[in-house]
Length: 603
Image (cartoon, rainbow, N blue to C red):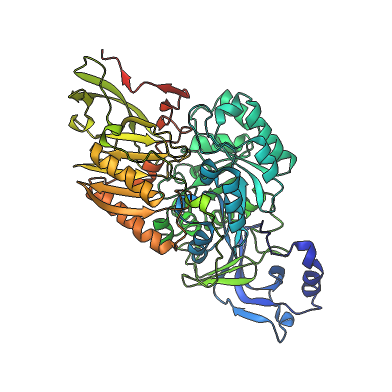
């Protein structure tokens, strides 16, 4: 198992003290920049920062006496020196990239610290998969801290995962060098009802002195929410409105406000700070899920900070929410998150605090990016064969595997339909009357926008296919889209207007070992190969992004105009976010955490 090679503060404290006291030269000095102090929310002009062994030794208006013959000097005059940006909650797998390639993609955007929850791979490969992600994370030139996934399955009894995470797994992971805490506790009903397994995982984390991540996806802010908070989760990123943010911080949680590729939840919540005047130190910015196209074309945490500022947040407050607040929450305030003595020298040079151009980036005192280019190597883990051979379905699927037989003697049916909501994780529980032809339900012939949706079991080759209906994608013509990214159980989700196309798409993903594919009228329009756990590519972000862009274009060519519709597709099996989802167990009403029938009686 890899260990973080960066020296601890006690290891180099004598050198830091020698330099700070003026008795020894610095390794690196930033000269005459504008020091952005996130502890005091000040921008202090004409300051120097001295660095020794990758950590900040001292900061003062003039540190020229610390410049020796071997000291590297960086002219920062006229530019702001801000801390490297921290992502407080995210899933690397959502970028379709390995930790190494994700790091290479975000380094030019000024992200120097990530708190990652690899629960996607945990659902496919269990503790072994988490260890692989953890080990590659520790090989990188920036800080990647891993949260041990808590919920695989996310809702026990409502889905079947490739592996199940146990309290014993959690206790073991808490001994690993890069584990920072417990990943988002998605089984919020379990916590609220004092489920022994969930509480055992939380207890193992708290005994290790680490942070318990939250995920409370219910709009109910009454006793169940209070019970959830009492159970131990310390943060939550599932808020979608101002009331959610206020409720969380009032009960002592950190409110994590996310801007991902498809989740736009900052604007609706940040008014708790900008208008209601709540203490901003209890708010954290994060991305949660960003696909490769967003990383390549739009940015990462720099994008989130800019967005928060555009929503009316003071730039220095927004920077706090993406640096110091995050570090403090995870118990790392003395290690990172600010430009102050002893901290890791994670620093960005930028000429403007509002538009936030990321002009140069240092991590641990090493220059890692300049003008949008990554300057360092991001080493790859040697992913074994078991991580690359994870799509196990029966040998060949046919169109009839995706057919929905009608109830005997019926001329029409009333179906429960999953309703997609643009730019949000929740779905709507809809109903629609659907026609029948030759004994099978034909949603495409009904008024409105209704498609087939199928979940193909892919962990144990059971051959099981769960069929239902979905609305909101706008697809037209004979087409299908299939993906082995299907949060959180990561079976295969297939959405289509034509059953033959659905079979083609599903069989194609079995051939390539996982990914995302779109077929129309027998032709493959786009394919993103994701051979690692059916979730990730080990190719560079720009290559994966180009294929993802082609996938988006193919979706649009099939009639879908939703923003980041792929993210909506990939969450249709997430049985912990209301209202309606599909799983290998059937159609799940997440408002009641119960399976419901696909068909309702006609009145």
